[in-house]
Length: 442
Image 1 (cartoon, one colour):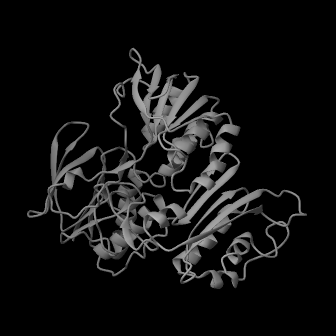
Image 2: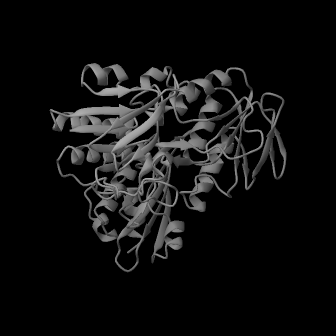
Image 3: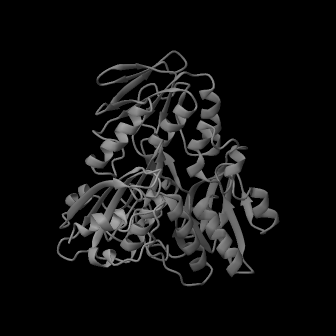
């Protein structure tokens, strides 16, 4: 059996390894447009701030390992430009030589990921304007930061916040421009207010409800022009979203999500026989919303890739879906969210109620306490928990994972109150803060 995989990162190589383990006669060809395989994209912002000193530390397995240890035909600089579903042929071009290539397949996995959006601003071609998605991107930005004093970060989502924090750690002055009226749009406005406070407390100039009009400079960017002001700057880093890399299969008849992501079933199959998709180029079933969603995270990519590889090799494994769990460190705060927010529940016309609480992370008399802000949304008719948002210090991550587990199993507020959670004064209260806020829902 000949397996061809488009993409050499999380989803693609998770699938390749499963095929390697399941089918001893497999011929596996992976086609990567860049030169780096299997790296931790989530670690890239920390290259900028110096917490991760060497980008090589982000590489889980290099291309030679896949070739020499596992016998995978791992190709680099192979950019796929088309797929013929009738002849089962993948075509493309070698980005180094410019020579075209073609590969036939028995089964094909599209794990081509996504690319960062760079809005069509006049002046975006100027030197010093960046996006962050790959190791070469991170290395270019880090080298550029050595020669600049002021950075304008555009976008207040997770990437924008991580980049802004790390530019501050690198000793730069930072202005963050967000066209919406809050940071971190996945949070409700009352919770996002804590994030804005943390940004300003750490020296970030925060400009909300401003739109970039254009960038200016001679050969290098020198100013960002919004609809309200001109920002003198030395560099611009855009973190405004991700677009699925699916143009190469736009004429294949594959069902696609509204943003271009490939629609897959629970076995990672597309609607075209023998073609699978996984990772940032594919949809993920959201267990709370009960719809196919687009949540491009490394955790999802690795799980979907594993499921795709198993099914391609003849096993039967289903992807159980996601609850939308994500976490971020932002200076002294941990920002966590799982399920749906109050805003999302209202937009989807779910019946909902929310309870919020600000408390301490553990026993009040014990040293080292930090504030913990919690908001839980639930269905008043069934008591089923719909989502939660947590912002605080120590213990925020632990509680986020407990809540995500509860959501995965569709627990009610009554079920949650009965959980036997750990307690000792350095770690918790007799009633865990999550249980405290959920008790208010009864």
